[in-house]
Amino acid sequence: MADPFPLAGKRIFVSGHRGMVGSACVRRLAAAGSEVLTADRTALDLRRQEAVEQFMAAHRPDAVIVAAAKVGGILANDTYPAEFLYDNLMIETNLIEAAHRADVNRLLFLGSSCIYPREAPNPIVESALLTGPLEPTNEWYAIAKIAGIKLCQAYRRQYGRDYISAMPCNLYGPGDYFHPERSHVIPALLQRFHKAAEAGLEEVVCWGTGAPRREFLHVDDLADACAFLLSSYSGEAHLNVGTGTDITIKELAETIAATTGFGGSLHWDTSKPDGTMLKRMDVSALAALGWQSRIGFREGLGTTYKWFLEQSTLRG
Image (tube, rainbow, N blue to C red):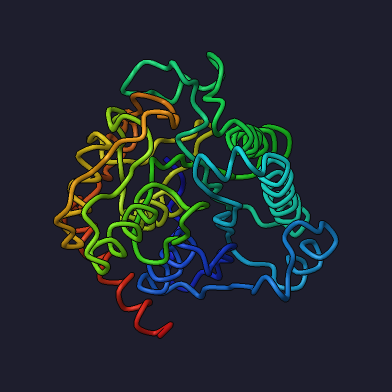
C-alpha cells in the first residue's frame, strides 16, 4: 500500500476526459473534492511529444490518470492496426515522460484485459502477462497497453516514480462509443437491437457462435476503483479490475434484446470470428486491498440504455 494520497484538494489531470472512462473518472474525482484538470483534443494532441510536455510543465498537476486511448472492437483492431499501435504508444509514452519531466510523482495508467495471452488459464491472474501468444484480433492494442505497464514499472525502478497500472475487464456504461462497426460488443448490440425494435424487424444477426464468455464492468465501478487505487495503492505490479463473474455472448445478446424491447429472433453468423472463447480475470488481489464492484449487470445495462436514448433524443 502507498502512503495515503487524499484526493480532496488534489489537482488531477484526466487525459481522455470526453471518453467513457475519462468522463467517469472526472465525475468520481469531482465527487471526492479533487480539482480536475482536462484538455480538449483540439487544444492538445496527446500524440505530439512537445505539446504534451509543454502542457504538463505549465500545469504541473499532483497526479495524472492516463485514460486516453484509441479503442474499438474486433473489426476496428483488424482494420486499423497501425493506428491502434502508433496512437496508443504515443499517447501513453508522451504522458508518462511528460509527467516525469514535470516532477509529477503520482500516475495511474489504465490498460485492458486483452494484454493477457489468448490461452491464459481462467480466471486470469496478473502473473499471466507475457506467458504466451496474444489474441490476434486485438494484438495491436494489447501490445501498446503492455508497453504502458512496462513504462510505469521502468520509471518506478529508474526514477522512483509512484506510477501504477490497472487492467479493467470489458467496460460499458454512459459515454460509450456507439458505432455499428467500430464499437465494442455492448454498444454495438444495444444500437443494433434498438434499431431493430424500432423498425419491427423479425431477426438480428450477431457475430460468431455466441459461446464465448466475457466479464463486463460498469464504467462507474472502474472510476471508483481508480479513485481507490490512486489514493491508496503503490506497487510495481499491475492490478486486475473486474467483477470476477462472466456471461456468454449469447446471454448478453438476449439480455440486450429484452432491455431494448426487441421481440424477434437472433441469428448467429458463425462465419465471423468469436475471438477468445473464455476470458475472466482474477480480481482477488484488488479485493484483498478492500475494493469490489457494486453495480449489477442488468442494472448497469439499463442505465446505459437510458443514457443512449437520452443522447439519441438530444441528437434529434
